[in-house]
Image 1 (tube, rainbow, N blue to C red):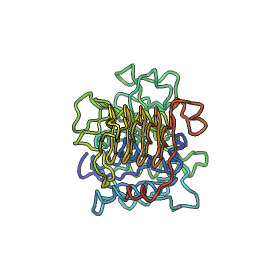
Image 2: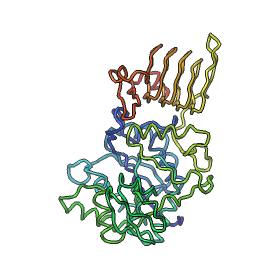
Image 3: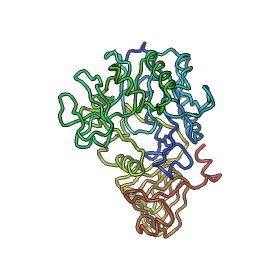
Image 4: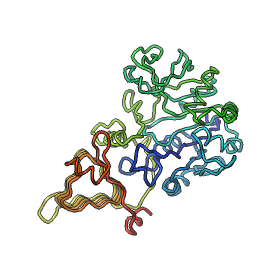
Length: 419
């Protein structure tokens, strides 16, 4: 990306995340903890900052306070200068008395921010996906193609394409048609076994974006959504291009390694699977790439500690992520992700589970295929994930049988750990 190109990014962080309930009972989806040390929103913000995009507005609406707190603590001071900022913009009813009626309406109601900066390119990116991406390469493609709109797309096997919205493109990447869940997905040019799925990330020429948003508002039949209204309208006009995400390269990786990893963690099962993707010896998404790290809030947590209990049992973790502040005092974790300040008491066993911050697992408790949200205290000898009928009476169960234990209220102690 040319250093003289002025890019403004809007990050869509207002989604309710109904399919992630109960994890989104107290927070918007982008604020849900992920990978032990992060929040979901950290991935898009890290990609933008590493790519040199440092004019960023985060648009919020639903239960935004956790996002506001997180961005204030970990992001607002990462960039500085007249055109370098990361700011949260709550719904303000700048135009009329309506809350945001869709993703496109949220940008329409903040078009004054585009006018103030006068950028060359406007990015519209979601805040609820897990991936690494050099966004500057997408901007270069957008400008080299002389596109008015560019959609980031992920190649998937055609046999799986009927579950998605598919971009039918020509040899130059121009989108000929957007087809929602087709029975016979059109193939990518030169690759008959693959088709292109929209990732929900967009680049726009500012004047075109402004005009199409005004046209949307003038049409009472629209749904005020980028995927349903804006992109189809610009596709019919012949000015939309598809950027092939599989061609994206980030520093610190070799060809064929970690490329095209992108996960929409909009369901409990997808969220669970994406977390456990991180724990393998050769993970599909590598958190240990120091040339493209995922940035987040820095807490003053002590190092993790593994100790023997009074009976001589050793705390241990196998094929697992163990975050700072954890103490495994004779407890055991396998194939799991442990968040900050998790305590595994003597004889406890955690298997194929996601344990979020400040959770205490009591003596001899057994946890299997579960997601335990923040601040929960699991009593001694409790079992979670071993009896579906009992679990269903006490907790939420996902479609694939993952047990979700909801977040417990903060205490003075857990609040202090998050400051």
